[in-house]
Image (tube, each protein chain N blue to C red):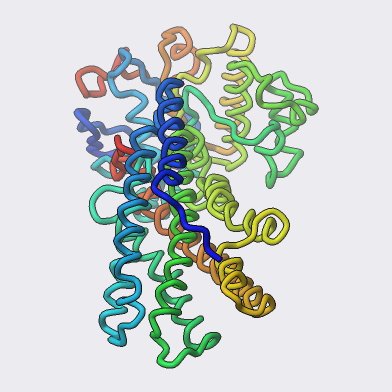
Length: 267
Length: 202
């Protein structure tokens, strides 16, 4: 039986977030504004989607579902950029993050729908939308972390990169160590979740299915499938972002091109 | 190499600058801070944007890959950077015999390859930076105030190592320095950068 949450229960949790913001502000750690904006957004967005989810799941129009998928990808691409302390100027930043999300999440979702789940029809929204959502949510985190790490490290280690160029290394070699660190940063969250699954954390989807009465083994199989898909998606997404951005950080004469970057004062 | 030729080079507010160096020659350049000495060397190594023609024998700077150019036209900046934990890791991939000889001529023993980067003094970094740069066997050396952090003894060792290399390879060098006596010692010709122009000084 589901225990209903009262308004008071939610307020209690909200007060905790509020306090976190206050403490962070007092200690000068400067995440307060972002934290509050995100907390308000999660409330409003979940309320809205909760209201229309039933309608969405009963939809049978392919074009409508594809449209929803594109909106999801665009928003995720936008969010990745908002988390960057420095980003590529113009449409490059958004293009690279949304493009990589498309290649990783969208295509892996399609692959999964056609070959593994084989729902009828393939675009059945109750499979397609949550699957894409879980992939995007995780891939987005990986890409945002990897991208931020790459650009920030390159910015701070400019003397090292230029020294390596002076020694005749290619642009690729000169930033390779930094790229490796960025790859690690992007993949740590999903590697952690896989390592901790079942021992430390009970993945939400699996737990939900079992609580709702599904056979445990079936729920577990779904969860493993999702984990692997997320890992592959995150990996492909982070790799392509790191590749594209490190290309964009150099010009055709293998010089660092920091004028292509813009400081993001809100991040 | 036989000839390093700079024709009508422009960068930032500087130029046109033209220069020619033959093998084993050293040209000295001085000038106030901010006059564009370092920028000139960076343009020659193709690390900054610039216009004009730069030619090493029959090879045009813009016609070969930038990293190959930088192996031949090598810049030693005023502050060298080191990214691995120990000295030796920066020399991996190069043959040991060469390195040991050069280490010795700059006053190091071979065990310095095991030193941690954190314990290097700025003078040691500068001398090791030269040895690291020479591993590529460059044809042109661009030296940006290379002995600013060295005492008289080590400055002498540094100058001798450069001269020996230039004659053995043979190669040429552009030597930027504030020390007029040093330029007197090592250079055939001296120039001053002033108001964006390179002026011959006698």
